[in-house]
Image (cartoon, rainbow, N blue to C red; front, side):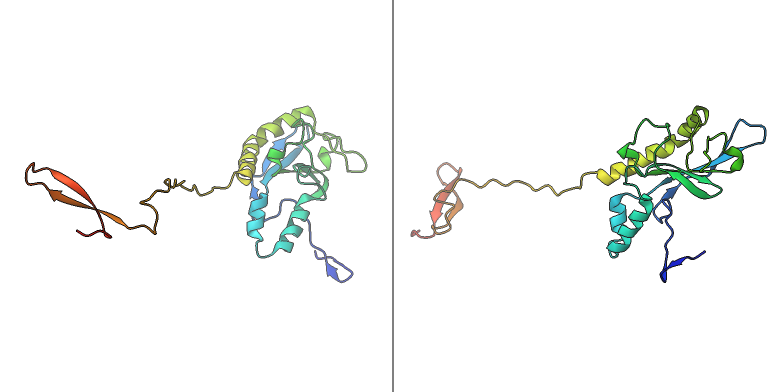
Length: 213
């Protein structure tokens, strides 16, 4: 489907649809009901800010538009969490619905798609407006266990985003105290090695080019 508004084609906003997003496997969770009701759940770890800048380094405006679409009209911290799809239509997103106590910036890259049909609405306490969804504690525990590997991976990807940049270590050099022999304007000094005939010991003589031999 393609939609135009005032002769401008609209671009779909998919919070997980990016070439750099790491998608997990789609998992089925059976619910305690007689009709075989189930939900489908999948994890997505979106790219970090440095990865986005590198990917769009020659197209900065396109990169900003992509980040805005992935944010789903929320800020970067609030957009983490569970995205509820009823009949493949997104009805609620952002936040963890009690799975985690609060928004954690270290897992801000993690998104979770949760798909369900009409037969699960009562179990998820979906209201008549189809905008409110609630995870019962029994299901929240299963979802939390399922998210543990993805949560760890999201933290690692975020940590890579914030890792300090490597810098070259410069070797410190110490200049010697200026003296008569280090002055470039003075006469250069050289050493000569010679033998004394009487003691047959090696001796050193200090010679200056400005003095006669």
